[in-house]
Length: 194
Image: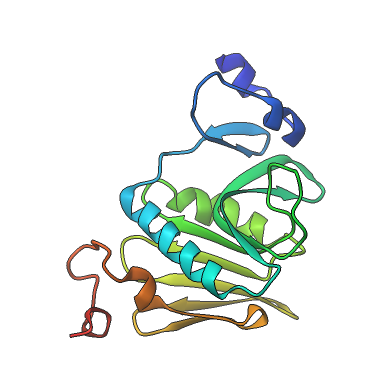
Protein backbone atom coordinates (compact mmCIF):
# COMPACT_ATOMS: atom_id res chain seq x y z
CA UNK A 1 0.00 0.00 0.00
CA UNK A 2 2.85 2.41 0.78
CA UNK A 3 4.18 1.95 -2.74
CA UNK A 4 0.85 2.93 -4.30
CA UNK A 5 0.56 6.02 -2.10
CA UNK A 6 4.04 7.23 -3.14
CA UNK A 7 3.28 7.31 -6.87
CA UNK A 8 2.16 10.73 -8.11
CA UNK A 9 -1.56 10.79 -8.80
CA UNK A 10 -3.73 13.02 -10.89
CA UNK A 11 -6.94 14.43 -9.41
CA UNK A 12 -8.98 11.92 -11.47
CA UNK A 13 -6.90 9.00 -10.15
CA UNK A 14 -7.11 10.34 -6.61
CA UNK A 15 -10.92 10.60 -6.74
CA UNK A 16 -11.13 6.94 -7.86
CA UNK A 17 -8.56 5.77 -5.28
CA UNK A 18 -9.73 3.99 -2.13
CA UNK A 19 -7.29 3.00 0.60
CA UNK A 20 -9.84 0.57 2.08
CA UNK A 21 -10.38 2.65 5.24
CA UNK A 22 -12.59 5.54 6.30
CA UNK A 23 -9.62 7.91 6.53
CA UNK A 24 -9.87 11.30 4.82
CA UNK A 25 -7.22 12.48 2.36
CA UNK A 26 -6.28 15.49 0.27
CA UNK A 27 -4.08 15.41 -2.81
CA UNK A 28 -1.04 17.67 -2.39
CA UNK A 29 1.42 17.86 -5.30
CA UNK A 30 0.23 14.47 -6.55
CA UNK A 31 0.54 12.68 -3.21
CA UNK A 32 -2.37 11.62 -0.99
CA UNK A 33 -1.97 13.23 2.44
CA UNK A 34 -4.09 11.93 5.32
CA UNK A 35 -6.09 14.62 7.08
CA UNK A 36 -6.06 14.78 10.87
CA UNK A 37 -9.47 14.38 12.49
CA UNK A 38 -10.86 17.81 13.38
CA UNK A 39 -10.67 18.76 17.04
CA UNK A 40 -13.65 19.89 19.08
CA UNK A 41 -13.04 23.65 18.68
CA UNK A 42 -12.43 23.14 14.98
CA UNK A 43 -15.83 21.48 14.61
CA UNK A 44 -17.64 24.02 16.78
CA UNK A 45 -16.24 26.93 14.77
CA UNK A 46 -17.09 25.26 11.45
CA UNK A 47 -20.70 24.78 12.55
CA UNK A 48 -20.98 28.34 13.92
CA UNK A 49 -19.52 29.97 10.82
CA UNK A 50 -21.43 27.69 8.45
CA UNK A 51 -24.73 28.52 10.18
CA UNK A 52 -24.01 32.27 10.16
CA UNK A 53 -23.12 32.20 6.46
CA UNK A 54 -26.09 30.04 5.52
CA UNK A 55 -28.49 32.49 7.10
CA UNK A 56 -27.01 35.52 5.33
CA UNK A 57 -25.99 34.40 1.84
CA UNK A 58 -28.05 35.68 -1.10
CA UNK A 59 -29.63 33.14 -3.45
CA UNK A 60 -28.35 31.13 -5.25
CA UNK A 61 -25.20 31.01 -3.07
CA UNK A 62 -24.75 27.99 -0.78
CA UNK A 63 -22.23 27.10 1.91
CA UNK A 64 -20.72 23.61 1.85
CA UNK A 65 -18.79 21.82 4.61
CA UNK A 66 -15.71 19.72 3.82
CA UNK A 67 -15.72 21.14 0.32
CA UNK A 68 -13.47 19.61 -2.29
CA UNK A 69 -11.51 22.24 -4.19
CA UNK A 70 -10.06 21.68 -7.67
CA UNK A 71 -7.75 24.08 -9.46
CA UNK A 72 -7.78 24.97 -13.16
CA UNK A 73 -4.58 23.96 -14.93
CA UNK A 74 -3.45 21.91 -11.89
CA UNK A 75 -4.01 18.20 -12.10
CA UNK A 76 -2.11 17.28 -8.93
CA UNK A 77 -3.89 19.16 -6.10
CA UNK A 78 -7.29 18.48 -4.56
CA UNK A 79 -7.82 20.22 -1.23
CA UNK A 80 -10.66 19.83 1.22
CA UNK A 81 -11.66 23.18 2.73
CA UNK A 82 -13.54 23.34 6.01
CA UNK A 83 -16.20 25.49 4.33
CA UNK A 84 -16.69 26.95 0.87
CA UNK A 85 -19.34 29.16 -0.68
CA UNK A 86 -20.38 28.79 -4.31
CA UNK A 87 -22.94 30.81 -6.24
CA UNK A 88 -22.65 28.55 -9.30
CA UNK A 89 -25.39 26.09 -10.28
CA UNK A 90 -25.08 22.80 -8.38
CA UNK A 91 -22.96 20.20 -10.11
CA UNK A 92 -22.86 16.44 -9.74
CA UNK A 93 -19.16 16.45 -8.94
CA UNK A 94 -17.24 15.68 -5.72
CA UNK A 95 -16.03 19.29 -5.43
CA UNK A 96 -17.39 22.77 -4.87
CA UNK A 97 -17.91 24.52 -8.22
CA UNK A 98 -16.36 27.98 -8.57
CA UNK A 99 -15.90 28.80 -4.86
CA UNK A 100 -16.17 32.52 -4.04
CA UNK A 101 -15.38 32.07 -0.32
CA UNK A 102 -13.09 29.47 1.23
CA UNK A 103 -12.79 29.01 4.99
CA UNK A 104 -9.94 27.14 6.64
CA UNK A 105 -10.02 26.70 10.41
CA UNK A 106 -6.51 26.71 11.86
CA UNK A 107 -5.75 24.19 14.56
CA UNK A 108 -2.45 22.80 15.75
CA UNK A 109 -2.80 19.90 13.29
CA UNK A 110 -3.67 22.04 10.24
CA UNK A 111 -1.96 25.43 10.76
CA UNK A 112 1.29 24.76 8.89
CA UNK A 113 -0.37 22.98 5.96
CA UNK A 114 -2.83 25.83 5.47
CA UNK A 115 -0.28 28.62 5.87
CA UNK A 116 2.49 26.99 3.83
CA UNK A 117 0.70 24.91 1.19
CA UNK A 118 -2.92 25.94 0.79
CA UNK A 119 -3.11 29.71 1.26
CA UNK A 120 -1.04 30.51 -1.82
CA UNK A 121 -2.71 27.91 -4.04
CA UNK A 122 -6.22 28.99 -3.05
CA UNK A 123 -5.52 32.59 -4.03
CA UNK A 124 -4.84 31.45 -7.62
CA UNK A 125 -8.46 30.32 -8.04
CA UNK A 126 -10.07 32.75 -10.53
CA UNK A 127 -13.49 32.55 -8.82
CA UNK A 128 -12.23 33.12 -5.26
CA UNK A 129 -13.02 36.52 -3.74
CA UNK A 130 -12.56 35.82 0.00
CA UNK A 131 -10.22 33.51 1.91
CA UNK A 132 -10.88 33.27 5.65
CA UNK A 133 -8.27 31.75 7.96
CA UNK A 134 -10.01 31.24 11.30
CA UNK A 135 -8.03 30.64 14.52
CA UNK A 136 -9.08 28.14 17.18
CA UNK A 137 -6.68 29.41 19.87
CA UNK A 138 -8.18 32.88 20.09
CA UNK A 139 -10.84 35.05 18.43
CA UNK A 140 -8.96 35.92 15.25
CA UNK A 141 -9.75 35.78 11.53
CA UNK A 142 -7.30 36.60 8.75
CA UNK A 143 -9.49 37.86 5.89
CA UNK A 144 -7.92 37.84 2.43
CA UNK A 145 -10.06 39.83 -0.04
CA UNK A 146 -9.45 40.02 -3.78
CA UNK A 147 -9.04 43.58 -5.05
CA UNK A 148 -8.17 44.91 -8.51
CA UNK A 149 -4.44 44.96 -7.80
CA UNK A 150 -4.30 41.51 -6.15
CA UNK A 151 -5.14 40.64 -2.55
CA UNK A 152 -5.70 42.70 0.59
CA UNK A 153 -5.45 41.13 4.04
CA UNK A 154 -7.19 42.31 7.21
CA UNK A 155 -6.73 40.85 10.69
CA UNK A 156 -9.96 40.73 12.68
CA UNK A 157 -10.34 40.13 16.40
CA UNK A 158 -12.78 40.71 19.26
CA UNK A 159 -15.15 43.58 18.53
CA UNK A 160 -14.40 43.54 14.77
CA UNK A 161 -16.87 42.85 11.98
CA UNK A 162 -16.19 40.55 9.03
CA UNK A 163 -17.63 42.05 5.85
CA UNK A 164 -18.08 40.19 2.60
CA UNK A 165 -19.46 43.27 0.85
CA UNK A 166 -19.98 41.73 -2.58
CA UNK A 167 -22.18 39.04 -0.99
CA UNK A 168 -23.96 41.40 1.40
CA UNK A 169 -22.72 39.40 4.41
CA UNK A 170 -21.69 40.97 7.72
CA UNK A 171 -20.63 38.84 10.70
CA UNK A 172 -19.45 39.87 14.16
CA UNK A 173 -16.30 38.06 15.24
CA UNK A 174 -17.62 37.92 18.81
CA UNK A 175 -20.74 36.06 17.66
CA UNK A 176 -18.67 33.31 16.01
CA UNK A 177 -16.66 32.64 19.16
CA UNK A 178 -19.51 33.08 21.66
CA UNK A 179 -19.71 30.22 24.17
CA UNK A 180 -16.62 28.44 22.84
CA UNK A 181 -14.25 26.99 25.45
CA UNK A 182 -11.16 29.04 24.53
CA UNK A 183 -8.06 29.17 26.72
CA UNK A 184 -8.10 31.72 29.53
CA UNK A 185 -6.39 34.94 28.52
CA UNK A 186 -7.53 34.68 24.91
CA UNK A 187 -10.66 36.68 25.64
CA UNK A 188 -10.68 40.36 26.42
CA UNK A 189 -13.40 42.37 28.13
CA UNK A 190 -15.12 43.37 24.89
CA UNK A 191 -15.35 39.69 23.88
CA UNK A 192 -16.74 38.44 27.18
CA UNK A 193 -19.29 41.19 27.24
CA UNK A 194 -18.24 42.19 30.75
